[in-house]
Image (cartoon, rainbow, N blue to C red; front, side, top):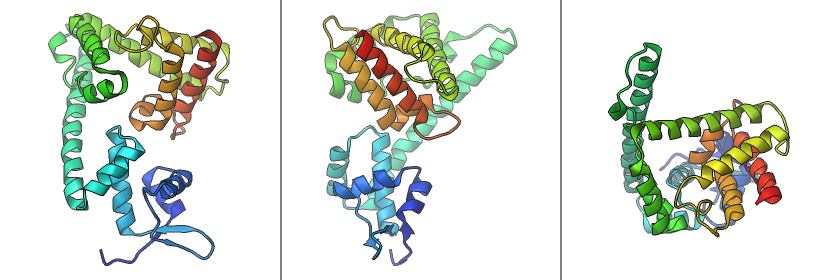
Length: 260
């Protein structure tokens, strides 16, 4: 790359949808160094740094932690080859999301038109095995086996009800976060209770296992909602950013400390 154009840390944070603090942290741990540092201490990034940042954010989308991302970047010297791999995954994910959109649109049309719902068409793209490896890594193979057996045993109506329950919970979290009330308010804590009851109803999770660390699991999930954009997107408010996920995290922590 011969172009010597550089961008300031503030510009990159805005363009990439991240924060200057995150970029400084990436520098501190040796994950993404700026291409230059001005006499005033401001960091600047060139095109090579932008490509590396894009790869970092893509790997974060896959659920990798920062140490694992560093290992992947060190192993893969060719940025173009690495991005081709990412692109293949993104296209696969795009296809899955397109099927989900079509499935939901079909359901809406049927409901509005008073038509009979076709159960076999309602879950196209809702592949619960998508995060199999991640679940096994975090909570063990038995956790995935139990939850997989539970999901497969459900009828189409049961699955639909479960999806509706998840959607309603996310919607209520967003509305509550946008209302401006505190995470320790009665309304927020009632939502936190619903959330924990939902978690304990999914076999295989630490929250559902007898003797499991329910408190640690709930608090850890709250932190994950903020750290992992895939899950935080479920609680995104109109203000953008991670404010909604942070509200959920704080409310769950208050509930866990008081009740678990």
